[in-house]
Amino acid sequence: MNARRSQRAGLWEIWLVWALFGLATIAVFETYWRIPPLELWKVHNSGFVGGIGRAFVFLGFSPAVAAFGVLPIVADRLEDRRADVLAILAAAFCGTVAFVQTPSHLDPKWSNIYPVVGVALAVALTAWATRDGRREAVRTSRAGDRARMILAAFVLFSATPYIAAELGFHLDGVPLLGWIFQTGKIAPEPGSGNLHATVHYGHHHGLDGFLLCVTALLLSRLLGGIRRTGLRTLTAAILSLMLVYALTNMVNDLWIEQVVKRGWTSWEVPDVLVPKLSFAWGAMLVAAALIYAGFFARRPLLGRR
Figure 1 (cartoon, rainbow, N blue to C red):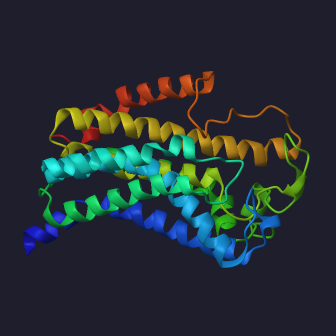
Figure 2: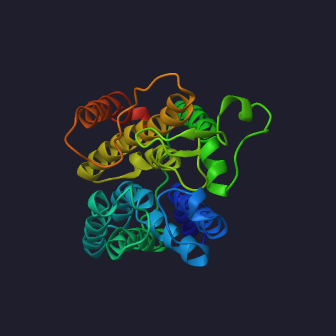
């Protein structure tokens, strides 16, 4: 019994990641059920259908990206060839997120089912690893945890308007936050000129950025417990890129809504939501390599003794 409890405790970071995405899914469902499509973004269905459809689309986006960091960890813990095959299959399903997601049309379509299946497999593998996986007691350094907590606190504050929007309200009138963040004011949408709330109700890719940033920080605590060197290197590289991708999407969303929509400038931080050959994605890859070399590849942050 003690061994089983220790085994379960070793994967609490992954379960916290899944719990955060689960809570976000519930919030998306409730908000898109309750609020008319005209006050949301790029959706057309309303009521229960609107809520369940938008939640389904969400499950096939940032949770699928997060799964890329989870799968190598749980596969390594299981040390079972069947788990390796399932992890590769799940990654293939999750990889379809690169072309099935259409940010300009967020109603559900049949192709959205592929990344959702990948996420379901990743959760199932997490449960399997929790029950039968190798017991692991490796921990990260306190210095690494302090750095993670500082960055997590910063992105949590920055994501405040998106957490509010996810729950279906604005920050207007909220002490301090309502002064720092412009949310409910009607402003023209860059590129179209359509009038809309500065931060529309519902889901934003800025919140995806927050969730993926927290995911990368939590999963990085488990790097030192990955025994297979190739998987450890792969996971560190994935988390490095995930962190850069997350922060860039948060900056992109915040810049548009808190800077461009205030009329301070017309220049926009490049959109990096979908992978493509561009200077912005090249810069992100360079930044990810620097993070890997400077932080994730160092012994203290990998938790190795």
